[in-house]
Amino acid sequence: MPARRRSYILVPLFIVACSIGAAIFTGGGVKAATTPEDSVIQSLRQFTSVYEVVEKNFADEVKPDKGIYKGAIPGMLRELDPHSNFFDPRDYKILLEDQHGHYSGVGMIVQDRSSKTVVLTVFGGSPAYRAGLRPGDTILEVNDKKTDGLSTNEVADLLKGPRGTHVQVVVQRPGAEKPITFNAIREEINRSSVDGFMIKPEQQIAYIHIAQFNENTGKDMEDMLKKFGEPNLKGLILDLRDNPGGLLNEGVETAGHFLKKGDLVVNQHGRASPNKNYTAQHSGTSGENYPIVVVVDRYSASAAEIVTGALQDHDRALVFGENTFGKGLVQVVFPLNDNTGLALTSAQYYTPSGRFIQRPYSNISFLDYYYHNNLDQKNTQDVKMTDSGRTVYGGGGIAPDEKYDTPKLNPFQIQVLRNSAIFNFTAKYFGSQADLKLPKGWSPDEAVINAFHDFLMKASIPFTEAEFTTNHQWMKEQLRVEMYKTAFTYEESQRVQIEMDPEIAKAIDLLPKAKALLDNAKKMLVERMTRQERAALAH
Image (tube, rainbow, N blue to C red; front, side):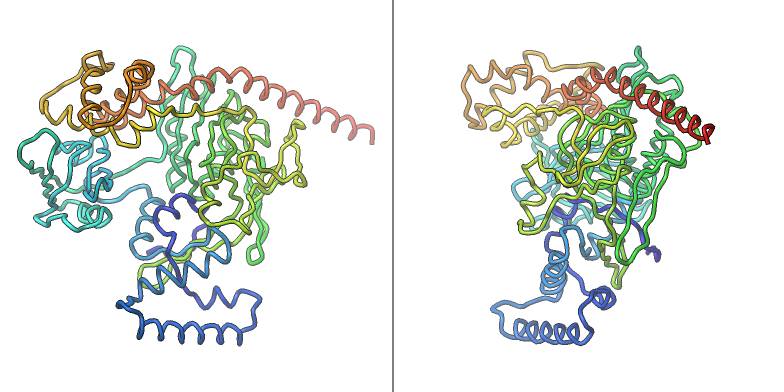
């Protein structure tokens, strides 16, 4: 276990998914508050008394991990802020895996479907992919251990293990008469947080998506830009949608690649931590010259907001999409006993212009805070200016320079997605055609659309023929993305999805505006330097 503390811009949605009920106690952390020591001791005695009464008299047996880990400690931390968080051994292990960007296993994502563990995604080239496992397979056994009664987390833990060890997986495949057995050798699964491609190669326009900020993000992004021939790029789409955050230093390195050396990326300060400026350290100039559109949404948070705020405040990129999450707090992760960890808010951070983007969290429920709908929230008292004099506000995340209103789903689309009809149809379609091969560039034809029509009817999913006809193109696109995961690879399906994404198409159209913003910022910088030189000569 790492002994050093890590500055970590915590992942909001990760906390919701894994540890809403987690908890911890650290004497040092409590004593750091302004409460006198005797009051702390008295409070601990009261807690011990309450716990003893509960343990002796509650109707069912009370286990310490439920009463302490999942009750008392998270309750204490929730009183501080929404992002201080305790990680039990399993969650702490996942946190470290996310930071490192790799783990040892078979390379697939599983999900609970009707109390059964179903394969959701198989990563291309992984042991699971080579063995022949597919999305839609229901896992029945792992190494002769039946999965009946096991949670999806428990099944996922069975699939992981030391590198080089054997794992046998028995699944029920839709369309297959009998269960199928697959054998694989566990490997180290490296999941880069960065992926991308030349989305408009004839125009030298690149697309990069960053899923989160782990230990390798900055290097992986630079390597990808080198592969694209960065000095020749005419534009970049930097996609930070759904990016929940990650390591502070990696966010600084990512933003710094596109800024001039010495430019301020972010400032942080807190009661127990000194004020600190993080500046761009990139020594090259190739990242400073081409226009950038940063695409964000309401789930772009923390380190993703640091990158977005820095590029916006320095007029280096045009920001496009929705208001970001609005998290301006920094956590330090403290390793604790028994392979647990505590992420404690230690500082606030400020964008280069000096704005504090944290949304208010007092007098609001925990869930309302995370699933906020007020995207126009801002602090009108926290008004700052970008380098070129554009007005920006704190208090409500990063407001985009150009907004994008995501098209709302119609009732037919909601029904289809709510019933996982696209996923289930794809699993059955390929399950009944074990040796089916599809050509590169494949797209669903009318035969596939008609088969999906019949599948909806057999599944008793209500729709009208008029709805089906109206949504023909939408179904074709959804089916193409989902079916690519099985016919080709998960990675290729993601590329197809991006190529069809109307928001990304609009972002490409905005590159001329991003270039005008960049050119204007450079012009104003030259004028400012000229004025300073003249003033110096006058003296």
